[in-house]
Image (cartoon, rainbow, N blue to C red; front, side):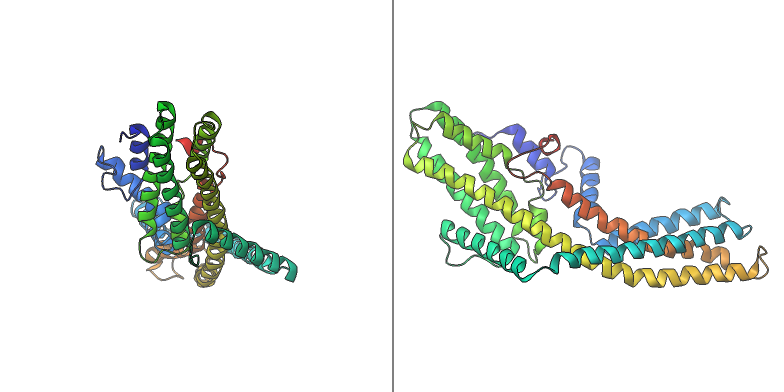
Length: 346
């Protein structure tokens, strides 16, 4: 069976886990892998630590060449004062985020019941339509079940159309089924990785947008309705339902992930923010006691200044690393399955 070379090449290039990823250019491949790690895959504390290491190295280098060498402490104390006030504002914003997250959970009994019933109805409908005894309770196996069911229906469609006498119907059905099966095989491979939680399940489908496949299915239904067998019509309808179910599950898991991530980030930022504030304030008080002279301060202060500056940047680095991933997830899941954007096609 012939492949859609352009679609397959694009999918391979977008997949960091593909063994041929970056084969055309090792430099570009390594950059893309590093970018993927920073945006999504890397531990957020490690990403923040890497940013702080860069800040420490940059400030130290500037101090060694005399650009930020401590001559008088008025400018440095002003900078530390700005850090103190800025970090207080940042921590206040974190408390607001906590209130926002909590407000999503503090709902009335009726809203909680409606939410639970809605999820239960969705799971039961999926269970019946996929013929499962029970549906998995974890995100990754649940998505994998939906995708495997979609793949089975795609193969069923191919079998129902391969024996027809209409070459156009066979070609159109073959194109959509190959795109679906190739993509699903790739995503299922990612979902099969160990310890795939809510974010792992969500990250495996970030590049997924089925608007093209839904349109292709509709086009087949409209163009060849009179030539399709009953099995082919049923397979097309099931593919449409499964694709919609995948997107519903993905959007629900996104809401779960964002609440979980923001809660964890808020707690972690408070853990690092208070010590950072203490160290920065202590350095500011020490400089205020000495006035503008060097004699009142230890001779090691020029060595400690880069460390204090780096510590003062810690809350901002944590904010950067977590918001970077949340924003990336939100940007890549902004389009529902019914629509697409120019960025989704690129």
